[in-house]
Image: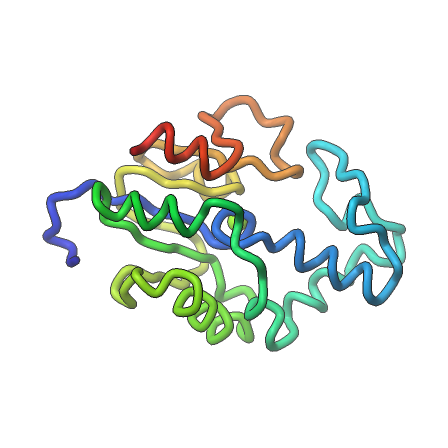
Length: 179
Ligand SMILES: [Mg+2]
């Protein structure tokens, strides 16, 4: 695949879209502070906003640790669906990874392990997501807001109160919509 490919470009986010990053955070909160894995996550709130106040900043400490992004479980259905989508779309994985410098190698390794069929040419680690493509799937509206193509908001507890975007709740719904 290359950029002259006639297929439409589909940009896909990593955290909370391809990767179940919340699950990794919960695993660590559970291990270190005994927080229940099934803690109720109030719609519209970040995970850390559901925790006792003294743990509010802990997520950033975890996310800066080397290895944090290496062993995150893939989202259910993500691998099969992205593989199937490759027949129809030129797929790019775009992650705002620069915020966490130790995440870069972890994220590359993670993609090689779970999505080996995505070539390096189609992976972009960036700050702001200024990209030209046809479709973007992301859980953060800050990434979708200025995108000029079709915007698909991938459901995550923090974005459940947002109504202004076309929404996909899981990878099965992405498959139904785009395949
Ligand atoms: Mg994300």
